[in-house]
Every structure is written in C-alpha cells, then in structure tokens.
Length: 115
Length: 249
Image 1 (spheres, rainbow over the protein chains, first blue to last red):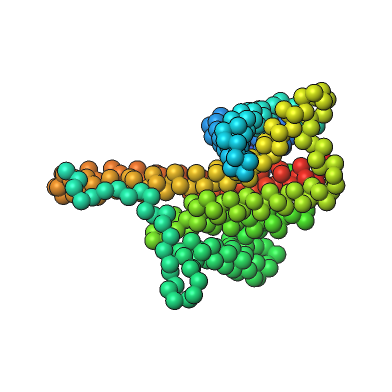
Image 2 (cartoon, rainbow over the protein chains, first blue to last red):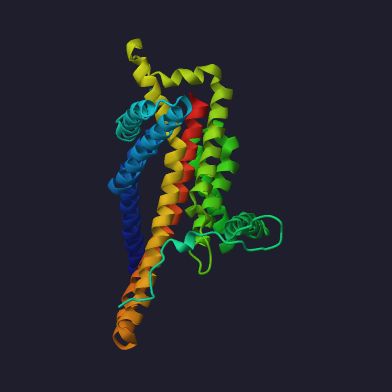
C-alpha cells in the first residue's frame, strides 16, 4: 500500500515537474520573442510604437506640427520684414519637408541615433 | 424638434473664476492643477508611510508606480539620465492625474487647454536644449547638418532639420491637447443625445432610447481612462527620448 502511495506521489510530482518545465520553456520562448521587439522599440529615437493605429495618429501629428511651425515662422518673418507672402510660401514648403522628415524618423529602419 | 436644446460641446472648456475677490484671476483650471499637484505627493506619502518590508496593497501600488517610471526612464535614457528621473516622474503623474481628474463630474481637465500642454512641452524642450548645450557645447548645432550630405544641400537641409527640431514641442503639446479635447467633446456629445432624445421624442419613447447614449458613454469613459494613461505615458517617454538624445550625442 505504502509503496503504491509513494509511487503515486512521485508520479504526480513528475507530472508537475514536466508541466513546470514546459511552462518555463514556453515562457522563455515568449520572452525571446518579446525581447527583440523591445530592443527594436528602444532603438527608435522618435518613440517606438509598432502598433499601426498609434503610428498613424503619431505621424499625422508630426506632419501637422512641422507644417504649423513652418507657417508660423514664415508668417512671423513676413510680418517683421513686410515681405508677405514670400517667407510664408518658402517656410510652408520647408515645414512640409520637415514633417516628412519627422515621419521618416519614426519609420526609418535601423539605428537612427547615428544621424 | 429640439428647439431650445442645443449641444454645447465646447462650453465645458470655458474658464470661470472660482475664488472671486482674491485679486487674481484664479480659474477652475488652476484649481485642478493645484489639486493634482497636491494629490500626487500626498498619495505617495501615505503609500510609503509604513515602509513595510512586505508591502500591503497600497504600498505595492505606490512602489509599482515608482518602478514603472523608473524602468521607463532608465531604460530609455540609460544610467546617465538618472538625474532626470524625478522630473519624468512628476511630469507623468501630473499629466495622468490631470487627465483622470477631468473625468470626474463637475471637474475640469486642465490638459485640454493648449496653453497648459504647450507650457509643459516648452519646459521639456528648453530643458533638453540646455542639457544638449551643457553636454555637447557648440557641437550641438552641428546636428542640424546631416552627416555625409553635400555642402551644397545645406541651405535646404539645415532649415528642414531646424524646423523638424522646433516641431517637437508643438507635436508633443498638440497630441495631448487634441486627445483630451476630442475625448471630452465626444463624452459631452453623447450625453447631450440623451437629453435631446428625451426632450425631442417625449419621455415615453425618448426616455428608453436615451439609455443607448448612456451605455455608449460608459464605453467612452473606459476608452478615456485608456487614452488618459496612454497620453501621459507618450508624453513622458518622448521626454525621455529627447533628454536621452541631449545626453548621448
């Protein structure tokens, strides 16, 4: 009776151990899958969001804000030098360029810090 | 059908004086900022008061908050950025508390005013410029000319780089401001639908139908809780990244 009991216990322990081992393996697999993407996120100097909708929202704001800065600087220069609409035209195009550059910084593959 | 009842979705962002006769124009926005600035240290003080080795629920939550921001700040800025951790921590929880305070009834979300978010963003921007100048000296200005680009392209590339740099505080502030305004306008719109349905269709028909916008508002409130945390996080992590650039280069 006792032997059988002991055998039963050890069998149970074995099963538990196997379960734990497989769980550990799964956890490691998951972490190894998670880590590269984590590293990838941190390497993006403009804030790594790989989710598509977050990216869409962010890039829209980036495009718009650079354009807005261009318009504001152009308007200010025109107001100061009374050359309207010379600088507002130039700087709105530069602002659009800067907006595209901002979005490029988000999507650019590889290390951005070495710009 | 809806005579006399209009949805005034933007009225909620108007400022009103709360303490008259003080000699200063003290609005509900400032009041909420003061409350947020008080809530955070008080919550942390009471969370850590017992300093238990085996923390209770409240202490655990406080420690988790600390570790979350600490991990984010050090993970992004590296060990050199340790000194900026208190700043990031304060910034994150000030914005987070502001976003969440705004969700309470009869309250006001001060982060829905662009003047507040621009001030926060400019603070970060000026700080990152100062840190850059301290760490890199005049070499900081060399970053506005991309390495390897022909000199002939400089008149085009340098203004674009400068504009891109200057757009940082704008994008940082617009993101937070726009998210908060959009969320609160949506909540107000759907809350208004309930009243419009009840008054327009009569209480017998409009009343039961008016439950639908309320259900939607419950879902939107949950979404706002997510957005409030997410925007505070985005603000904080972008601050970390700008400071990291300022430290590293």
